[in-house]
Every structure is written in structure tokens, then in C-alpha cells.
Length: 149
Image 1: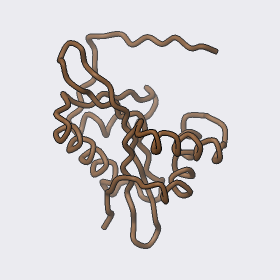
Image 2: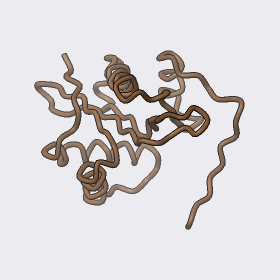
Image 3: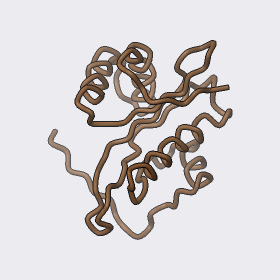
């Protein structure tokens, strides 16, 4: 049985490795120490909410990170589900759905209007998971990006 709970500062060593693996999935370099510094800043500055999935025998096996934002048209908070990752050996055990469930509960508890997320077009697992958990693919809006570098 997996325990879903909010991440604590003492989780940073294990969480940093999970976060690094998540980033490497998206073709980013192996940077565990930079991941730790990034996560530590998010936690200590209360800039994100991170839920972890913990196995009593294997430690942390997954996480989800949310950032708060606001919807001007809905006049309410909205949460950005920015990162979701489960170790490959633990996939297929509904851990992702349990983590998403914690996110949905956070939305309700904070009177938010919902969750938004994006995932790579070629992320087959995510593109099957999200619709099966009630997310609707946005076909009404284009999403644009501007990068500094």
C-alpha cells in the first residue's frame, strides 16, 4: 500500500533523485544537486505544493508538484499540475491516480476552480492517464511560449 502525503524538507534527498529522473524523461541533463536546490527553494518559499507517494519498503516512488495561479475569468485560484512522475518499476499500480486525487482534494480545500496541465504530445502514458482521470484536452485555445534564452 502506498502512502500519499505532502513532501517535507527531510524528503529532499530522495525527492531530488525522483525530480532529476522526471527531468531526464524530458531530455534534460542529469543535475541532481541543481534539482535539490530548486525543490528546496520551492518548499522553503512556499511556492509549490508537492505530494509524494511512499512505499514502506522502497521509500519515495513518485511525486506530483503543483504551482498556484489564478483564473481571471473564473475569479478563483487555479492549480498548475506541473510535474508528475512515478518510478518505472512502480507504474501500473494507480500511484499516479492517487497523486492526482491528492491534487483534486487540494483544489477543493482551497476553493480552486480546477487543475491545468500540459504534457508532451508523445507522452503516451500521460496522454492516456489524464483523460481517464477526468481531464479534458483543450482544443479551444492555443498555448504560446516565449523563452528568454
